[in-house]
Image (tube, rainbow over all chains, first blue to last red; front, top):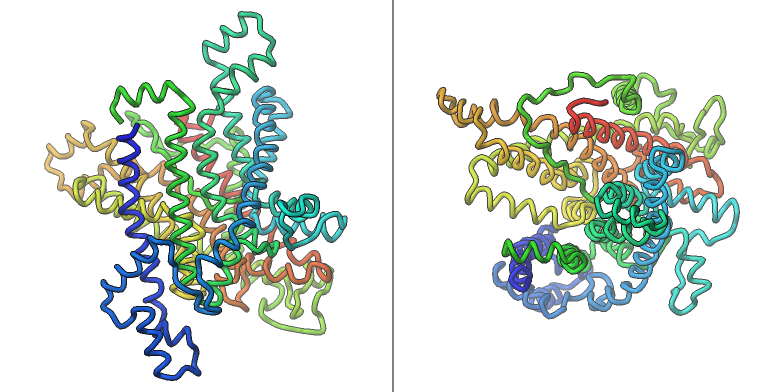
Length: 320
Length: 294
């Protein structure tokens, strides 16, 4: 296991190295000199020279890259081009909102996806299954930005039940926060719920044909007990990978959802930074997102073995 | 639709005689055919937009702004009094065109890289695959956003960005097929009768990858459409006034009270395209998995 972990962590290195190169190149690719861009057209030459020295732009490119890499490794992402705030602070301030939204979306996805998957597998080939299949196809085909607009039209404008945009921390004001988070989390979570439903159904159907299910039934257990105690647990094992993949996909989804609902999270920060050409923030966001993505995928692979002892056994025999 | 997570086609187990699309029977797979028909219709609209659009999609008549759907303007008019139906018809060009360009560009580069990696192996394989893994390590929309941030806004740049994001899935599919088939007897036979390496690669090995490649094309087209629309929705894709569905959706958000119907039609069009591509990919995949639809 340790060996495997070390090998997987080593695989991070080339990916992160390339990512950092891309992120670094980002700033060098802007037309013009970053210092001039930052200070604007009214800057005096001495100011530009001073900033160039501060940013290390007077050194050679490989030197600059190494210095930048050293800084990033210690969590120093530099300052915003626009308002001079440290980037790490700006990102930390936005992080809670994004985490709240992502967690809420996962809750929505599980609350809808799991029961739907179980129902569809129990009544396979009958109308509940067909209805749920229809739901999944629609939920997977509807673009999230349109879903968001539709939800706002219906629940905010027509019915006036929920606010159309904005944010209140659900931690500080649970009730008010809940009103704000419902529509964004539905927008973000509906697609994932469809993926979960499909996957759980397929997985359950497969498990239900196994011998141990026949054994459980022949012991005289109720069908309910067979499904919930024997089948469900085993069907959930491969879900871990799907779950992690979707978690990674959420990263992309929050960008769009936060834009629709004016949600003050990392996604909106990234978009406004791109629009305002605040490259130090874009750089930092990309590095953090990729690291997050890599860690999630690794965690998924590892948890696989933790959940299912059979895999661990096989893995150690094959010396993976 | 956090849609933008990638789906990869896993090549089927090698079969003695691959029988490509022999019996894609209509009555047994009507959803697939419906999807294909809708898709064909949308492609036709993209090509024929200038002939069938009732108005110039760019012609502004401010006094006629925000007219509700009527017989003169079946989908209503937008904030500049432009005909929404015409703009949607022209918008098909952006969505379908981007998808087509992405498939051609990413398909060519991906197939080439996959062939090289799979057939040559060793160092070349390692370099190509690490590079592609890095692209896959990014969530697609973030990578596309980053690229647009560097390249600048516009339809060409967003197409380039989406293409780059799409290359790895093609390459990995081809590589997997090649690795699977390389040691098969028929390849050996081709080598014995003196076929050149190039010929083995392109004429002997590649055709085996075509059926799963077709499914991958449908899947990649789906998210090319979604990524393009997503970028335009975020204001980083097609530049106004060129009509695109994502951008129309974005603008319509500002007028939800005045013109609630505005965002309805671009959304429906987008969903129609995405759904029909999804369904087509699904039924092609089923068809290939079973040899034919049953």
